[in-house]
Amino acid sequence: MTYILPRSTVPLPRQLNLTQFIQTVLVGLTGISGTLVRPKWQVIPPKQPDIDINWLAFGILSSTPDANAYLGVDSFNRQTSQRHEDLEISCSIYGPEALDVACLIRDGFQMPPNLEGLRSANMGFVEVSRALHIPDLINERWVNRYEMTIHLRREIQRVYPILTILSATGQIHTVLGNEEYLLDWETQT
View 1: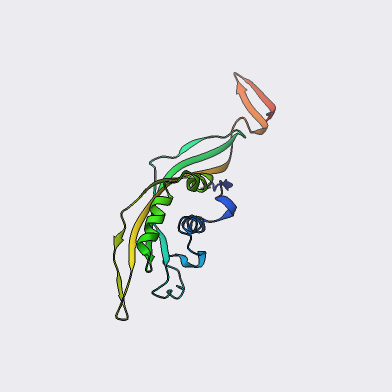
View 2: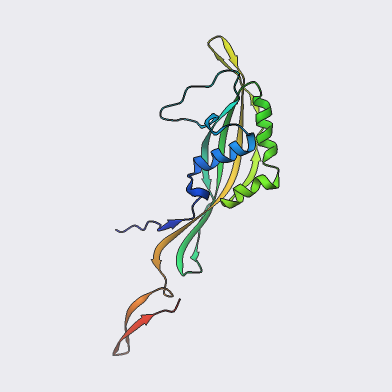
């Protein structure tokens, strides 16, 4: 049995992967340094910042695809797959102004210029959950923490190396009645 892998996928801006792209969005919305906007669940977690520093950790909790992908042919006669998925992103926000940072994220997604970056990545904003205050007790000190979830929707497009009749070249062998025909075939694209 032969399986077909996509030849190409529409990439995210600047060739970033999904986690890197989400990090750039959160850095842009909060103004917090990129070194303090961290992916959750790292293999080797970095040292936790001091209690008086605002920082956040984020992670993709789920990716829920729509029921069926659209299958079609693009303008270059290539077989394409297109689907939408909902992304659920968990944010843990720490520091003395953790609630203010949560509000920056919530309100920042409402500003049309901030949504341009999402649109450039075939994404859209759906909603932000309420911010829950869930402080941590670490070494006899309360660390201020808010938890919230961001919901985004994105479109994924993939191109598969399947020839259509319009993109095919070669020979066609057919039998009509008792006559055999061999035709050279080349399309003009």
